Image (cartoon, rainbow, N blue to C red; front, side, top):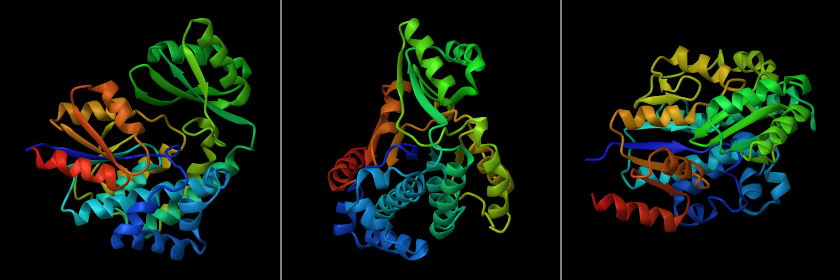
Length: 311
């Protein structure tokens, strides 16, 4: 029997219309979107299903939207009898993973990510920060480019996603300098369309604000193993998970190392739960021979169920 890990996407996976089909055909999914509207006090589902791209791209909308869609997809998988043997989530996706593992309720996670998004946006004025994906270089090379670009401002690796892809974040001018230097050595550099430079020290002010929110929430012990981004290791203690979430906003994401931990421990079936297929793409670069599928609508759900039945 395969050991199955559920992977939950982060910010950047969003698109208008995500989850709409599942909500139309599965009452459990529709109930998740309805609950999100009630908890937040505005029509998040309307923005997700039929809003404008620019509206959905706002950080304070994107984060609860991706969380809600991921949990809606997970609710359908639950109804179909699928349960993970372990969970992990990329950045924001950790909150979805913690809901799946029973550490937080959906309501708690939703309110946390909504406020987290606002804190992040407030930490760095619009236009001052940037992120970029550097493709085709080793981690040490990207780290050196960041060091060499420090005269232009703060810039550092933010996401170690998969072989040959590292995202950097920091002050706009410093990130642009890293991109210029990367192109000089024939690497690709792609500026990302984000309004906040995630996972760098510019977001350190967020930690204190998040601490005031988290102190009143009682975390439970994970029902299944949970792999945390900043440690690339399992965390089982509620207090350690809280501490990890506090540091996560301004610390790099070690996604590749997190996936290699799961692979080393025998996990051989990975299901990306939520919008997009970014994490599935990362896994195919990390371990090309391992089964990795994504579920975000009826078509991908049916495909995954058939694959599961074929075991």
